[in-house]
Image (cartoon, rainbow, N blue to C red; front, side, top):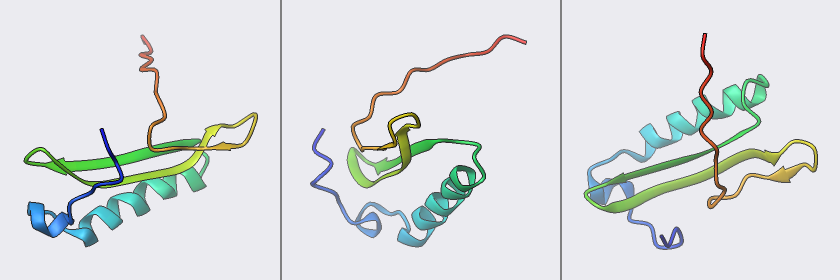
Length: 78
């Protein structure tokens, strides 16, 4: 997927302000140390309108999060 070609959120019926609010909420988790990093991605009707990598991809090396970072889904059993 080409993250360089984004549609304006409003052109897809989404709000730039709303997406910014999501980024602020995720950034707060990163600032509190609850997440090391994250990538927010939003799309609608097959069009990507928002991609924002934040924080660290690797805490040990300090490598920044990138839009194409791969994540492992780990589930914990209680």
